[in-house]
Image (cartoon, one colour):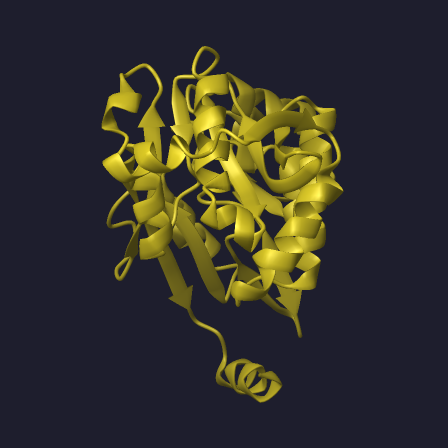
Length: 292
């Protein structure tokens, strides 16, 4: 296993390994990583038999491996090394390590998180909650359209959602916009709009791999939200993608209200774990506190 810099990575080989994997991880394609973390590197075994992306920052000569924004988890593709071996190797190169993965117990202190999904090959509509069914009956004034104008979602997102997320910066919103544009150009994603009359009242972006459709981000106006626009959006998306994919991934949330919303569609929870190793020097931590 070697730690390889971005400039030395053969992206054709890299992306081919991901595309051939039974669990295609969209977050790990080179073009995705280039947008969310331009300075990424990777652990790679001989001839790309096993790979793991390693996004990092370097400040004051201190390097930190981190879980990039708009990525849920990283997976090792291949069997030449496992996560425990990878962490042991990376500890010699990075003073702080932060990653998420579905495997339990990779290092001590991993925090359990969940995301929600629906098996589209099941009779999932029978599991809609009574409340969801009642709200959906009242959404007859809405209609769904597909669009390539991602600025529409960005505008609604900025006005009604972004300010509520403390960890989201202006730069992150720009990254989100770039991601959606790239996925549309590659036919790896689709923007769906909810309209009431001629007004766009909600929007959501969905990204595709071989078997899974994943809800990346969505937003609605406050008035449309009260009228069930987000219920309508997700219900219509589920109908639209049922014949093409086997899993509908809600992207997940540890926010109780958001998870509860997804559960109303009959979504199940899947666990994964958040790992952090902090060996940052004292002076670096002190400087970080001063900047806050």
